Image (cartoon, rainbow over all chains, first blue to last red; front, side, top):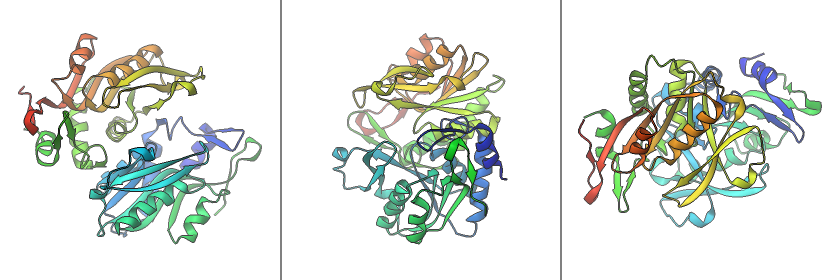
Length: 192
Length: 192
């Protein structure tokens, strides 16, 4: 069992409604050691991809994204969430992203200046569940003409449709932890 | 002139209404090299403080915070922004923070679990202008009984009241870049 899975078992909390809380080490308080563990696995998996930029979405994706960017010596870019009303700006790539947990659709956006057709972009995020955020980020990259070289995820809820959607769309996804079930308050991992 | 000031002169953009845009390297696209430059200065300035935790606020503070946390081998914690209506939770420290740029007051919050009276907390953020965010973060720390050992800032608008407010409150502030004026679209730095 990898370090992240071990940590999920030790410190994660499962709540009714399919909620896995990992805010003691991943997305509120952040343990830099586990973060380096995760980013090290992404870097190993996506080596030789000639990555030129790391893209994530605020806020929880930023910590792993800057560590990867830092190791590779490339810039990172984080998409911002915005209400549609603020988007009169033609200097932005935007795309709608639906949040199932909050049942709300927000636009996410990046400045056109920071994605170019020459870019080979690694997308990273903390969770993959319905895949809306990752697909939205991939759409921003596609709009710019840049290439998505892969998608690195900390924790994937493999029983939700996101992974399949990304596979079907032809993206290469590597999730450090793959969870098969949270039934009865117990975390079960997908066996590889 | 330090690297950050040089970069502000080269790549920053001054807009009417006292706006300095540094989103090509600091708070949208992030250059890991300048981030390490900044965090290295904080670490040098606040060495020997026996820091046990780094506290920042989403989203732009997260990148420098995780680098500092990573170097020191301590956890980082980021405060979240929330609307007051969501705050019925007694497990949270909360405090109101007014944004002058957006003219709106939000609550910021951290889980009580992640700040304890034993903690020596370094607060970091990307900008210091009116000081509302930094004072809010300091208030969260004080509520927990922990100690604020210092406040590290990337860019301070020294002509705005934030720095004075933090000085008056007895906090030790170190800003890597101190801007004296943005008048006439020109960046002038405070001479030390």
